[in-house]
Length: 249
Image (tube, rainbow, N blue to C red; front, side, top):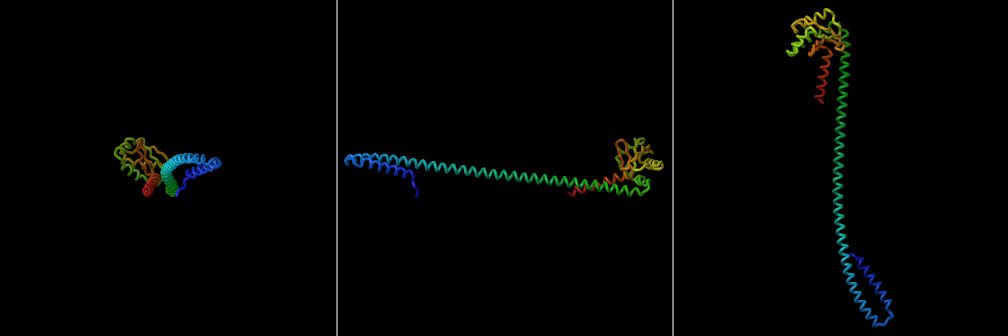
């Protein structure tokens, strides 16, 4: 059941008007009162009919406005819900993207840190191996620290490509022989005699001392270097260990 305030208001106005009319014309002649009352009643009926019609139109307009307002509210609510859903999805996507990016950055940083630590450990291990090797080799005679590597140097020469070996043969008079310790005249003659078959003739060697070799020999031309030293062996072992570690990560 609905309560129409417009009808109540109009009826209240009608009652007030009626009371006023009664109080205003109560003591006048009855005939005039009846005639006037009849005329006023008819006028009031017309006005009431018009007022009722106007009230009905206003009620219908009010209902139409209410329904339009409800429809607008429903549309606005759906639009708001859609916008909230889109915003939520966008924020979730941004949070997920940020989390994935931070995780990737953390994994990359951890991997880089692990690689740096591995390289540092490998470098320290190599340095320690070099120190140990150098310490152990100090107990050997100086001659063994290079003559024992001469056969390996000759084998390295034999394994060179023909063009590289030909280059060294052409540069026999200017080759550099590098050793960890100074070579004696007898050692130099021994090296020249051992290298002669591989080079075609006894080379004229320019001697250089490099303690970093620890032990062994290196034969160097203008574009070719043949190494057979403990430093080169340790470096090769370290590279192989590094490649093995990287292959297992």
